[in-house]
Amino acid sequence: MQRLRAGLVGRLRSCFVRTQTWQQATKYVSAVASDLPRRNGWTIAEYVGDRSPDRVQRLLNRAVWDTDAAMSVVRRFVVDELTTAARRRRRGLVVGALDETGQQKRGTATCGVKRQYMGCAGRVDNGINTVHLSYVREGVGHALIGARQWIPAEQIDDVDTAAAMGLPAGLRFGTKGHLAIDICADAYADGVRFDVICGDEVYGGCTQLREFFEQREQAYVLRVACTFMIESGARVRLTCQQAVQQLVGRDQWEVRSAGTGSKGQRWYAWAQIATASPHHVLLVRRHLGTGELAFHYCYQPQGQRAGVTRLIRAAGLRQGYCVNLVTLCDGVDELG
Image 1 (spheres, rainbow, N blue to C red):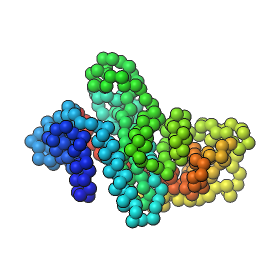
Image 2: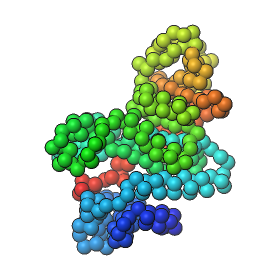
Image 3: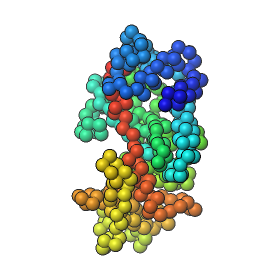
Image 4: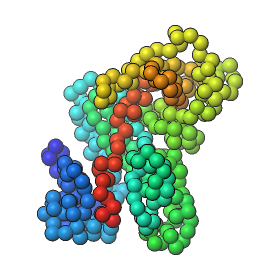
């Protein structure tokens, strides 16, 4: 692990003009990747041997480096290392998992902070949300390869607020779906390829994101709301809820595992509903205990492998591997 970390920070050197800034960033990375129970300015300073948090805060608040280039380096590094590891095993699916992570924050000075639903807290609270993309290799591992912070429109549109928060001139508001397009476009530009892209309802409900993937012949399995409209094979428009009500008999449901979780295999009943498009299906997941339903709108390009097994594997990988950044960001209030 130390060898891999050293290789990564070595590649990052070109993203920094000053050697001292890169060296401080190297120390910061070592602290963030450590087993510190809480990561804040003081604990990181103590871990890396600094007298105070000043150097860490200077790195995060005022130091200059090419953040886009750094993210590209990380992205290429992750893909290279996981691809190398996968060569020693039977090839599994390569999944891009879109998700967002909330972080509670007090005050109003930090860009992006507002009262909104925070998944980390399970309620509406003051905080920020960040959209991220994980690169998942089935049976090998996963890592983050892209991220964009969601900034509310009212902060961007208010000139005084935007200036006080340090928002760049010309910044335009983007929904989480639009941010996902930007993140995936960066990944494609770096040569990253996925068998399937997965995401929850925030992304499945974004028409522009689905069109973006379909224009690039990118297969996807995206969660959608029960009110999401599909066109059935009989050319009738139905909500997902209405479509599943037309399933008759147990033989249209198949019990399969969505993968291994913390308590063993995650078993669900699954059904596949055809649509008017030969490339789109609705995949329905039913909880065996509660009967709760989850809907996945799926796209398979011409000539690519189809089948419910592949779709279930992809949906299960997203559910099992979406990375939670709450622990990583713990204590960031004191960092700036």
